[in-house]
Structures are given as C-alpha cells and as structure tokens.
Length: 245
Ligand code: SAH
Image (cartoon, rainbow, N blue to C red; front, top):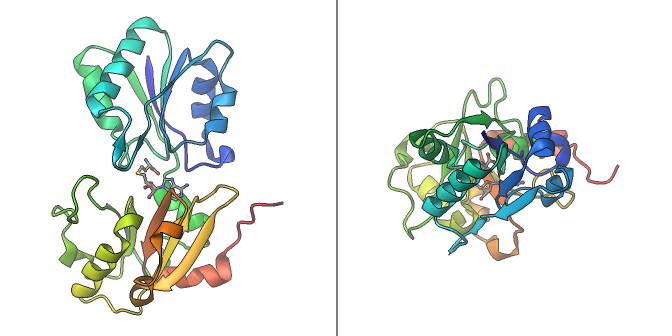
C-alpha cells in the first residue's frame, strides 16, 4: 500500500492524525524538500528514508524517476508513505504518482493535508474569505519551467475581488504584480508575502501592488507565497501567531 500523504504546511501540530499513524507504521518514507524534517523522527526504527526533493532550477530527480522509485518500493514493502508538503494534490503531483501506481496495479490512498495556500494566510491573520470583502479565493501558480508567466492563467479573469493566492511565485513577484496592474487592478490593492508560514521563523511583509515592486525578493526566506486582495488589511487586527509561547 502506498499512502500519498500531505504533511501540512510545516508546523508539526498541523499534521493530521491519519498522516501521523501511517508515518509511525511506514517501512519506507519517500519525502520532499518542503516537509518539516522533524516529522521523520516519528517513524519506527528501521524505517528507510528516501529523499526525492526538488528545488527551483535544481531537479533532484525527474518526476518519472520519482514515480518509478515509489513503485519499486511498493513492490518490496508493506507500507510506503509518500510524504509531501501541504496537500498532496495541490500543485503536488500526487495525482500523477497515483496514476502511475494505478496503471501498474499498486494500491494507494490519498491522505489530505492542510494546504499552505490556506494555512499561511490563516497563520498571518488574513482570512481567505470574509463576508462583504471577498466571497471566493483562487490558488494560482506561476509556471515553473519557463521565463514567461504561465499562458494557461486567464489573467483577465483575475480582475475580480477574489482573494488571489500565488504559490511558487515569489521569484516572479514583479511579473505577477505588473500583470495584475495591467489588467486594471488598482495599484493600491494590498499584497502580503508570507514566508515560512506556521514555522517558528514565519515572516510577513505587507505592501501594495505598486510598492511591492521595491521588495528585494532575494531577502525573503522560502518557502513563501503571495496573497493579493482586500482581506490582507485584516492582518493588522487579526495577526495572532507568535512563534514563542
Ligand atoms: N502541496 C503544497 C504546495 C506545493 S507548491 C501545499 O498544499 O501547500 C510549493 C509552494 O507552496 C511554495 O513555493 C510556496 O509558495 C508554498 N508553500 C509551501 N509551504 C509553505 C509555507 N510553510 N509557507 C509559505 N508558503 C509555502
């Protein structure tokens, strides 16, 4: 059995009970860069760990090889945990891995995780929806492998009052912000960059579309995501998370 498991956004307390249970029972854990490595301390003794992490520009292992690694481990072991940051199906390629296993007759389960797309704003005191301010939200990514922003994004449709949450986009901040202003979003629209959300060193930078063009994104710790919308204003009153008790 392969458990395609969400590890949550980082903070150990945000792991689900089911994820913790399969981690404790796992014979092998195949994990990514985004997870909190302290989770691995929960594994039983003798559990094998395989790191298949990727980082931007530096692909540790191509996806095809990751799929094959999971498959090969599934042939050898009772219980394989494939551990991914946040939720395994939110820009997590969990579904690609599941299709690969399914086509080879290997059983799998998905274990949802708390996605950073929602946990990061929540830990920053930014509600992704708020009655009368934002009635919906969107989770968007900038394409990983090209210099141009993803042409699959329908930019014109982002002119609404929805809360926009950009994952994997901090290195593209300028392009994202420019595109949003080009489609007519007011330059005063609030924007927040939330980095290392739910970790002890969580940090939040609040700005506006226009002012964010002055942010030096090299100074922002990763992982980080961008939230755009009026709901960002709530941070002033609702920020609650203190990393020290
Ligand atoms: N499956 C993951 C997302 C994978 S894409 C999930 O559901 O959360 C990776 C992106 O997620 C990062 O580039 C970053 O934008 C975001 N991310 C993940 N963990 C984060 C954290 N603790 N704080 C801020 N952003 C995070």
